[in-house]
Length: 114
Image 1 (spheres, rainbow, N blue to C red):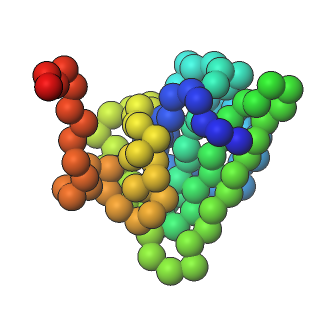
Image 2: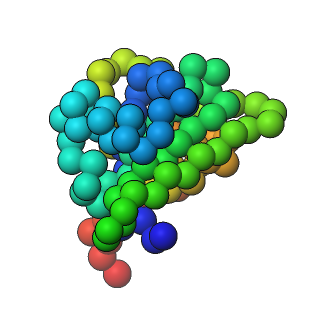
């Protein structure tokens, strides 16, 4: 399951009782996005200790579920409605317990001349 599409955090609180059909309905109707795209959609509960990742792969959905036994995910404060596009690196930070704008990360450099 190598992620090739975009990654979106659904910034609002999600009921973790929802499964594939309920989450794909949120993507289609609330976010007005295509759940059958190559994008990953990340959902989090109110306590920020559970998350689900939904994505379409060729002929079916994948649904990952993660529950922290201790601590919380550093979920961004919802200052927008809908979804927030993040990089794969930011997703790894989030899953590792870091914030999306982790201060110790090196910023990418472009157009360098040798």
